[in-house]
Every structure is written in C-alpha cells, then in structure tokens.
Image (tube, rainbow over all chains, first blue to last red; front, side):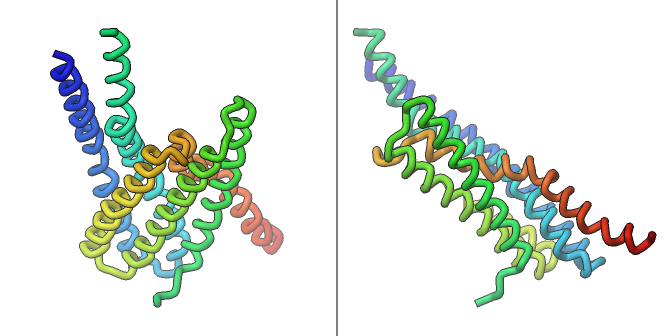
Length: 94
Length: 140
C-alpha cells in the first residue's frame, strides 16, 4: 500500500512538472514573433537599429520570465517535492 | 569571430550590475535571517552567472537574428530559447541537487534580470531626459 502511495506521489509530481513546462512553449513563439517584427522595423528604418534592439532585448527577457517560472516549478516538482511528500507520508503513517 | 554589438554589451552590463546589486541584497537578507553560509554564496554565484549568461546568449541570438529574414529570425529565436532553457535547467538542477549549493539562493537569482528590467524605465527616462536637454537648449 505504501509503495502504491509513493508511486502515486512520484507520478503526480512528474505529471505536474510536465504540465508546468507547457508554459515553456509560449516564450519561444512570442520571442520569435517579436524578433521577426523587429527585423521588419530595422529593414524599414535602419538608423533606429540600436533603439529597436534594446527594446526587443528587454521585451524578450520579459517574455522569457514566464518560461523561467515554469522551469523553476518543474525543477522543484521533480527534485524537491517528491522527497518532502514521501517524508510527510512516512511521518503520517508512523 | 563575429563582433558583438555595442547595444548587447551595454544591456548585458546593465543586467550584470543589477544582478550583482540584488545578489548583495539577497545575501544581506540571508545574513539578517541567520541562514547565511558558504552554500548560499555558491548558490548565488551559480544562479547569478546562469542568469547573466542566459541574457547575454539571448542578446547574441537577437544580434544574429536581426541580420536574417523574418522566417530565419523566428526559427533562430525559437531554437535559441529551447537551448537556453536546457542550459538553465541544467544550472538549476545542479543548484538543487548538489549539497554545496543552497536551493533558494541558486534559484532566486534567475529572476533578477526581470526585476532589473522592471526598474529599467527609470534609468532609461533619465538618459532620455539628458539626451533631450541639449535639443531644448538649442531651440532656445
């Protein structure tokens, strides 16, 4: 029975980490679109290259934070949560 | 080797400086709480280095992508984002798994560039005001 409970905990943690990483898709698409539009803007006004690059860099970094949140949650679910939850289970059972 | 764009260097410098300041602040909080030890310092070093390297690599990708066409830029940015996520995952996993690194101290610095960007408009506004000043004087 305990093995089953531990298995469920590990499975749910892995599933949660996988679901969390779905958020990693968004920044890739968003950054790609931002850079594509910036290329267009630089093509139209080459003299604004440095301003466009600065704004784009900042925008990309902001967009990437969402992916980072997901990454950190996934890492905690994979490496930290299972140990804590199994300990909690063992303490509850005694 | 390709020359690195000045904008990328400037922005990476700004981010590096901000990460340094925020890291010092985090160390101070750990000290105040009484949870400071060598693992916190090492974890902070690992997380901060990963965050700055991630931003710099993104800057290099942006620099390379601006020289490409729209489709090429999109593809370059997506592949770079995937590779950088793997790099960050490896760095964060090291910080969590190895006992010589503190978990919180190695994960928190990954978000420092975002905080730095939140304060960016304040720095940018001052620069813009300084730039606009001579124009006004010239008009007068």
